[in-house]
Length: 83
Image 1 (cartoon, rainbow, N blue to C red):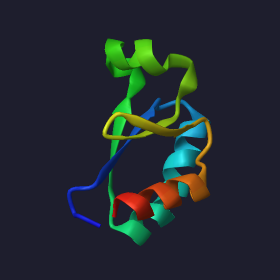
Image 2: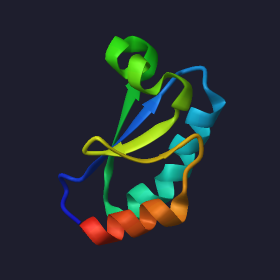
Image 3: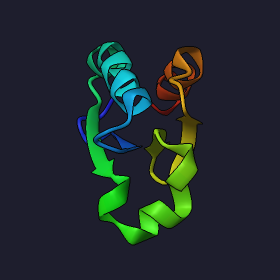
Image 4: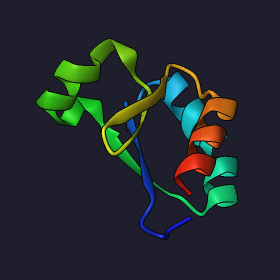
């Protein structure tokens, strides 16, 4: 997998689901050598308008991979296919 591969987590600081997804992602990030960018939904009106009640939302190049909870098998399959 390319070093340039980056997932984006749209999150909130006070959101326990967001914290849980970020922690759960650690294994996949290491397994696939993927970077993670965490964006604060509340700091960006456009993100808030798009994802307000869906956070946490995991994205790759604008494509939603999952929200609320990490779907490990789906994300692993996706990363395998793009790698």
